[in-house]
Image 1: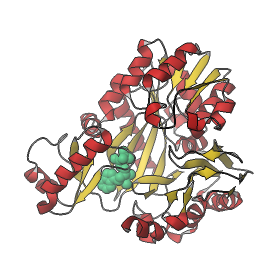
Image 2 (image 1 turned 180 degrees about the vertical axis):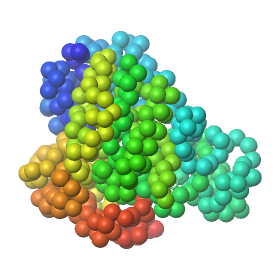
Image 3 (image 1 turned 135 degrees about the horizontal axis):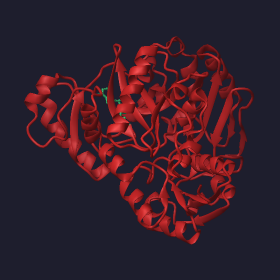
Image 4 (image 1 turned 45 degrees about the vertical axis):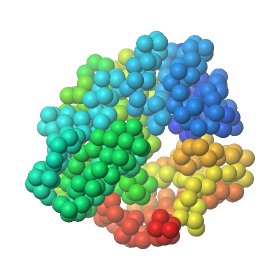
Length: 454
Ligand code: ADP
């Protein structure tokens, strides 16, 4: 087993890695930017190295500096967290070259799946249903192909992520101009202008399968996470099990995810994302990393995914089989709490947290790097905490969510906790019957819409 792990990340996920490592008797090295000196992950780690100024390009994304920090601290392995360098195959390769184990998938597998269009090709070859669309990235005139797919369609950036780089096209006359605009935007945002087209599903749910694969050919799939409640294609609330799946569909989805992982030579943990509509599921992409919402699966399946990642990277075999991995032990819901101002179009509101009261009690887990007196820097995303609620069934989990959200008191900055309470209390959410347009349909964030138009 490793003796020392460097965490190439910040915030709650860095804290999460430190906790798992400490439980395993592994020393940790935090890296931090100038803006993160006061962050909890820095104080918690055994050692900490400053890797540059606030902007991520000059610190958390600077591969050479991160690798130098690993070298001077005598690190064996590097955990990339999520975001930043986590899905960068070049970085994973550079780690191996310098003699550090990258705690994540092998570069070849992330390269195969990293581009959305390439991932879809792998899925098709593994007999996994995909959303109908163009074959690969668009290089020629696709008017006829799109006609056959049928409008409305969605233009997606192959290198896209974070819900960005998607455009709806409702009629043929808009196709050419929208394709050009999408390619220009993709190039500017993701450094790669490749785009492809897929059928726009009008009322899908987002349902994903967490998988784990060891270096010995064993792959398991856990119960699904339902991440249908989204804002601008970004997840807000995640739960497991999904109120929409039958045991048969769950099994089929898990089998599809395992087929895909095996055919891509995938190792370590990852997520196979699907859209689900009218009883059918369609692959959309693989996230070749641990995701923000992983604690939902940890609760439902009774597994420590962070420890599992570390053990897999160290060469250990999966400690359980598919039957054990797919057991559903409870209902779990995660709320992503962001420092945002609901009265000002949900603009991020960095600043000093003057006071902080965290919820607790049975079935409440809080993953956070925040504390009273902590100043949220403006350089990074606005998530300050995750509330993970568990209970024996969904109705009780919802009541517990409301109780815990009510207990959360953050002084000095505004948060999205109140919005989460509105989501949970909404009859449509309570009923379990909703799609990815839930937030628009319920008009829960209308102030935000007003801001977007302004
Ligand atoms: P990203 O990598 O940016 O998160 P994804 O491909 O995972 O992009 O899609 C994010 C969200 O966008 C999905 O959860 C869903 O809400 C919406 N979406 C993606 N593809 C489609 C589609 N073909 N039809 C309808 N909605 C879609």
